Image 1 (cartoon, one colour):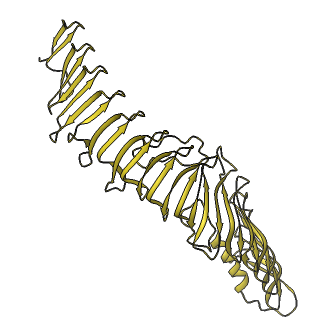
Image 2 (image 1 turned 60 degrees about the vertical axis):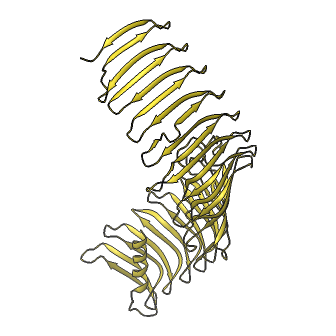
Image 3 (image 1 turned 45 degrees about the horizontal axis):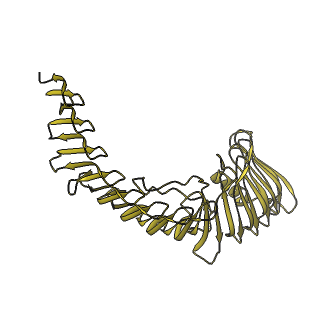
Length: 418
């Protein structure tokens, strides 16, 4: 559309008209046809008064006013017989309100100009509702700019808000998320941080000559210190952005102000030691992270979880290379009373041995894998054996299976050896 528009301007302003000083009618056809290309009046050899330009099908593309060669008055552009842009020129420069339409002819933007530069209120629309608004001064965005949710349950609510100072590189910025159900963040494997209701910090707008387009990171980079807030204004998180990526120390809070989580982020990914807390400020989890070759964060090394009463819930060491929990200190899970619930041991040869226990301390089941055979041993809570079963590497039943009564007497035997 822009290429067509600029071509029209060139055609109307670059042609030399060899006429006298009196106003004269001018008419020109598309080459080899009788379809009108352009028509208007000429004064002093220059386009004057109203001009109209048509395509090869005779459909109007531009309705423009001139004053002795200068663009002056109303200009209206058309695409497929629908208005695409309209506004006034004054002495060859845009002036006043210009309106831009989308391909369907629906209102898309309202821009204000002064002496050829954007100056005044800027509005962008989506489905007839304001999607973005702000102010220009001498072609530069200034003051408070707002971008709105244009669809969905938050339609019409502010999404972004920034205050622009033309003498600054960093601009104060506010972003709204409307997430009213912020939940525990410790269970996510990656960054896993739910967004706050709104956030305040700074942004870099890399091209002040360009419309803000706050929905696109092309011209917008989050930078510097940021804080996120709950709907009631309580702080949710605080940390640092480096050109849109979260970096350095970040902290997250419950709505009552108690610390929820703390640790270091690098390019939006968790690294090093992270600590997570219950809302009573007691430790919930201590986890270690490392960045993998694909740039994603992953658990590694020693990790521990705790019950709210302070007793340990689980502990283990994660081998990032093998992407499995190793046997360096076993992987252990505990009941809330402190008694062992399960233990799993793995070796470099991919053999494993798993034990689980009843809360009274008696064994509940044992599962072991030696690389060729998988065995299951289940027990009653009184300690007596309940069943024994085996599978081969193809997951087929094998060996002698046995089932026992609770008193320890044999109930059934099945031989799968054949």
